[in-house]
Image (cartoon, rainbow, N blue to C red):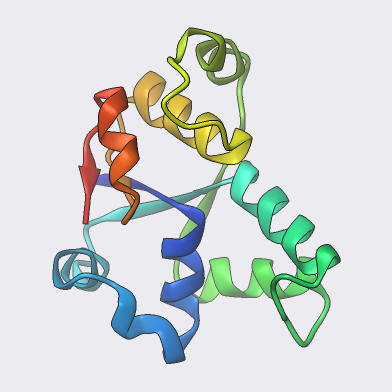
Amino acid sequence: MKFLLDTHTFLWLINQLYSSKLSETVYRLFLNQENQFYLSIASVWEIAIKVNLGKLDIAQLIGPFILEQLQENEINLFDIRFQHAIKVAELPLHHRDPFDRIIIAQSLVEDIPLLSKDKVFDAYGIQRIW
């Protein structure tokens, strides 16, 4: 099965210090070799901005670090397509974070469950797993 990762889910997955923050359900999904995981380019953008602002500390160059983590954890990059961007305009304003809104749109358009702790996403009718 395919799953889209929220930004915090990806960060907690790759950082062993925070892996205990993952729910048991999400952790079991990662252990299942048949599942496929995707990280939105929006999450990469969000991480890059947080590193630049000093809100997220990564001790190496961000590009190689993210690519290494994607490869190590067998996570695919998920491009933002035209349909995803247009879907954002149709979303109610339950949540105003632009990164979250594009991830929600991707989940809806592609009908892919989102692995996220963020309960406000439920207001959009996506399949959120935590």
